[in-house]
Image (tube, rainbow, N blue to C red; front, side):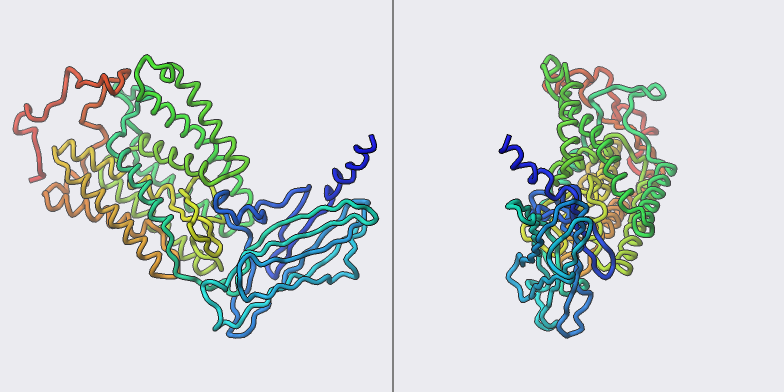
Length: 506
């Protein structure tokens, strides 16, 4: 009984203490209900946990002089216990930034139903002494709450990012971005060829379902959702609600996407295998095991699994009819990305990359931790749609190849995508400002395929044709890959009359 009474103060300590951090722009909740807010977690400095960096503070410009930044740490006590409070700042890097902490209240005792204020100061070197190594640093802040006349205490740790010049942009390169592009490009190249749905059969208009047609209505809905979501995030006060809404939607659709992908993999097994017989049960378990931990902990690797499942879902469930719809979709996406990047560049202190990672850290993007930590950026990232939409176009190119009995569209589309991604990587390490990937990949991909159609005198059918249906045969539904065989009735272009064969538009 005495041991239990001894631990009672430990159980209640800090339960009614809240910590706020205030700068010239706003005030942020750091600690409440015995829990550090997500954006101040020290674990955010660990790239293996999350791709969202901690909250950043700093000076907009040092103007060639010695810059000093101040934040106010406000600690509220709604408890009936008094505490002696001690605050310490620690620099996580070896820089010339001088850190100071002082009490600006009457004393360092936090009395019941009162608050105490601390000033956190950071003194930067002169501007001409700033380099890419010392202009920013992670800062670990420790708040020690010692109960008066008792031996119990609690240590609260949180982290921030501090910059001596928030407008400073360093030219950086990290291998994480090329690795991420290679993985995603190989995936969409594979999906472009194997778009048949194996896990279910659905008859539409008397034909097997092979994907929804992307028409002007679907493209219009996509544009409205993109523009509306960006406007709400950048121009309204509903940022937290929108972020939470995105996470809920991503988890819901992501769970369905993982279920679908698991079912597709199960259908690749032998027909009499145990997993294939009960693939619905196995797919349900796998989807829940991935979606639920992501919702509560949000690690980057689970986000990537959901994002890859999203790409598979998009490429298999949607199809482009011809290059006309592909051009409208991709050009509108380039315009939206460019406008959003310009708005962020001129209205936000942070870069385009950092803003997206801060505001939209959810499975709508593929992420990979950086090998070397950079300011306000833990991970390299690429948009989910910047990979899924080229996958749709490559799938269209493959179907055109099967119809035209050639291989040039698919091969040139794949090679042009690799070249465009390489140029984009070179551009990101050559300039200090962030550039959306779609500005490079979409025009080069569209231009290459269009020039190829002109060279082959097939532009008219390339632009206005109907390539929704895959003319190549696939394995019979219900058979394993090992038992795959051509169907008895095969559409053979070679036996058609000459009037039906049109290799070109001439």
